[in-house]
Amino acid sequence: MVLLSTGAFSYVGSFALQLILARALGVEGFGAWIVAFSFVETLAVVGLMGGDWIILRHGSYYHGIGDVPRLRATIRFALLVGGTTLVVLATALALLASMVAVRVFHAEPVIPLLRLAAATGAVTGLRQILVYGTQAFKSVRDAALIRGILQPLARLLLIGLALLLFRSTSSALVGLLAAEIILLVAAGALLHRRVPLIGHTEPIDRAALMKFGLSVMGTRLTEAIRGQLFPVLLASLVALSASGLYAAARRITAAPGLIVNAMNQVYNPIASDLFLQGKREEFEFLTKSMAKWTFSLILPLFGLAVVFPREILSVFGPSFRDAGSALIIMAVGMLFLFGTGPVTGILILSGRPRLSLIDYLSAMSIEVVLALLLIPRYGLIGAAIASTSGRLVNNALPLFQVWVTLRFHPYRPDYWKPIVAALAAVVTAKLIVTSVGLGSGIVAAVAATVLVCAGYAGLMLLLGFSLEDRAVFDHFVRRVKKGVGPGGARGADPSVLDYPNASADRETP
Image (cartoon, rainbow, N blue to C red; front, side):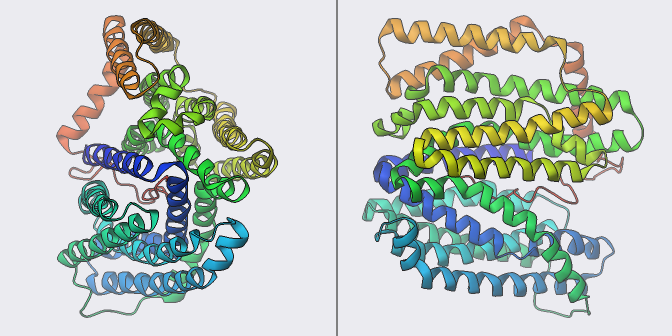
């Protein structure tokens, strides 16, 4: 509930910020922001040099055995390595800003943006290391406070103030830099409250820590590249405005990730416990219900994106309606991404992480090849097709592999209920919005959203929930009330994994 509530607040804040930026800067200015933000995120992720995983793995261990001196030494080592790398990368980006702006993006106005992105990326990376330091104490509260509450508030306030003073992409980035500095100080204060970084330390095996950190850098690097691939390629091969249009469409299709990721962080440890205990029926039972809930949650948004694409995009500004066709294509990818259940997690939990890595690399390869082939010729539509193709592969392969290795799939016969409810709600909303003549602007978008969500919720209640859904819901509620973690230890936090997703704090611009 901590992750879900703060995650909801974070998504709303981030979405509101993007609306403000899009409407204040226009398509081209928003595209320039997306490009600069992509460099911020990439620099912050790559510059960590595995310091986050070092803290989560070894720092958590030292905390668990009560070895505070070595815990302090581990955090300081991660800060030293990550901080040094971040400064080096930021300096390199600042020095190469002119060349990158002219030769890659063919736009000299991008030069100051890249230099601001370099400084902001370094600060953001250091802040992330400090936040991960708080998670070494096996609690998500401090991390949720920073990422879910303080971050959206600070960015909204300071970037909004900067745009009021000077309506430009550069001023918005100055506001982002100021917000990140404040968040860095807040993260440092929260970590210092748990363990002062100045104090006695004991020797740690730095070579082993460095080897471990470098071993995870490949995954982090590929994730960073994949996450920022399309905005950068569109800005380079088409125009900055194309990057802005793509980011607006992707922000809409990323909405279900908020709830699904929070559900997965609770599902994973419970499912792992059932699988390792050999409770095959309960494991399959839980997985099917989890997949059904996920599918049911995304269908209304899928219907809105397919039937009302121009209306939904109009909230970013009238010129963003041009991304309507791309939004429809990306919505198909969203449906497949969130509609196949936690199949990748099932592979990992069942001891087959290599298969998930192969799937991930296959999807990324397809995305890169298709992007290079389609974007120069088809622009935004080409990027949408490449992105959707990668998502299809990323989930179709593990879905097939789960069936081959475990002989079960995540689907149940009662999937017809959300499908019928969503179809009826969307058709009814379309008829009402069209007959009233609301056009294709913000008013139509709000009306369509209210009608679809209300109609879908009412029909789902009318159709009723199955005994399986109620049983799994009761299981989750009992876990929360009793405070029983995945291993059965009272008081354990079931939402915290020993090895959380590497992209837990990576944002989609």
